[in-house]
Structures are given as structure tokens and as C-alpha cells.
Amino acid sequence: MIIRTHVLPVARQCQLLKLARSTAYYQPTPLSEAMLALMRRIDELHLQYPFAGARMLRDLLQQEGHAIGRRQVATLMRRMGITAIYRKPRTSQRHPAHQISPYLLRQLTITRPNHAWAADITYIPMRRGVVYLCAILDWASRRVLAWRLSNTLTTDFCVEAVQEAISRYGPPEIFNTDQGCQFTSQEFTRLARTHGVQIS
Image 1 (cartoon, rainbow, N blue to C red):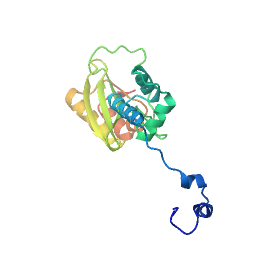
Image 2: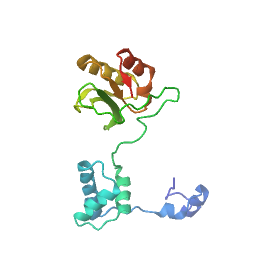
Image 3: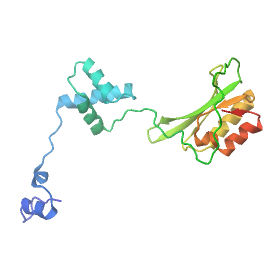
């Protein structure tokens, strides 16, 4: 916006554009070799520990002998576009119109397969966006019975995973999930009830 070769002085151009003159005269300073090496090391540590935030990275760098604080690590992470990868909320959003089932596993001893199953949704970060993973688990054996991936948080991929698990292993007595709208939806509860499964 500022044209240094213009007939108007830079000060007058700044005045017309309502910019501080310091903005026009500011020259970014290049990063030092030491700072670039530190950023390279932060990038390596982030690839090794993608769940590490500024505090953990600071501790790892201090163990290697770098004199650096949390705020400087956070600033460098921001500059590099690095954020810690961790499970974020909103995969279990409740639908206000759906019925909530009582919790049936309290004080219940689960000792045999197909007594109780569980299902949950998590997400997997990808290069561009995320994909959602729905897994069906047998409580007794801790075995994953079926799973499905989806790029949207719809009900259909959860229902498909349950249908596969039931077709391969037969229906359980109890099906335990959180109160996410995928598991309290009519499609999901209808599938469970047609097989005589108690929803928890």
C-alpha cells in the first residue's frame, strides 16, 4: 500500500491511510540459525509426540539443554502452525428429542462374551480434516467386534458397525453407549430392540 517512490512522502501516505509510520518503516528481522534449529527440533518432537503441548515440549527441550520457556515454545508452535493433537469434544452431542436409556452396568459382573457390548466414536486426524471411527467392543473379552469409518458424524456408519457385529457374533444382552445422538437415534434403538437387546 505504501509506495516508496511516490511523490507524496511516506509520512503523508501513512497519514492518508491512517497507519502508524512505524508500520511503514518496519523491516522484519530474519530468524537466527539457532532459532531455526530450535524450530526444526520442535517439529521433530511434534512428529514424535503429536499429543505434546507447549509445556511438554518445553520440558523435552529443557532435558536436551535448551534454555526455553513455555511461552516461547507456544509462540514458535503458533508460528509453525503446530498444535497438539488430542481428543476434542463434540463427538457425543445429545439430541434433545431422543430418549435416554438408564445405565444398566452399575454393580453388574460381566464374565461371558455377548453379555454386554459397548460402542463409542472417536476421531482420527488426517492431513486434511478428520475421519470418525465407530468401534463395537465386547466388555468381557475386550475384543473389537466391528468398526466403521466415516467423514461425517451421521448415524448410518454406527448402525452398519452394529449390524456387522450382530451378524458375526449374535446379539448381546446389553448394549452400552454414551448419550450421543448417533446412539439414541431411532435407527440405532430400533435395531437394538428388534434383536431383543437392552440399551444402556
